[in-house]
Image 1 (cartoon, rainbow, N blue to C red):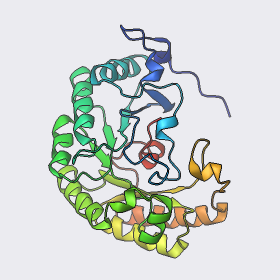
Image 2: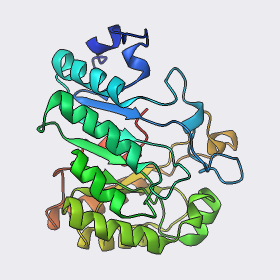
Image 3: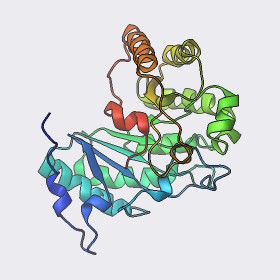
Length: 274
């Protein structure tokens, strides 16, 4: 398989000398990704998600300014044919959980590139659900709110900080987001390999699909810098991943949610940007 070419916009720098590739990346052809705020209020080891390394990502700007992002996306569209944007953020302490800053970034990008480019955003469910409307008004076309597991026992083990956010708050946020963004424009990530039995994970995905929410089932692959990698944890067996993926893909197709308006699968599923 041929190696991917380096995006042309990586060669550029902003007026203050910041390389574009420290602001946004193109991990797959056509998709620009960025983690707009690379800090998280849940990053102390006792609260951190064990598969997350958001504050240890190398070679990037910790906080991307809206104007910088807009400049980089415009160049990626012009030079590399970007067809979509995925923005995520670490969780902030305010009730919007970082959604308002995401909205500022989306609005700046819209000003530069116009209304046609899909922009997917990912954040923790805001305590103030009006923030979801602000994201849509700013020009976001899809949203991810990643729960990773629907099992509270596993949530407390794998994501102790996020587990303090009740599943009921996720449910309310997903429901509101479907009203604001529409069916198949709201997604969440379910990780394979946290300990759920395949049939239980599939049943949870099916419930979400029935509500117009697109669950991305993603195998846990501990990366360097994460607590899971430090502990030597391995990913799930390939046959289990294949089984769950095949069944969930079939359910998505049955409900006309396959593909659709969500940003390309890899970035939307991970919700990590870069």
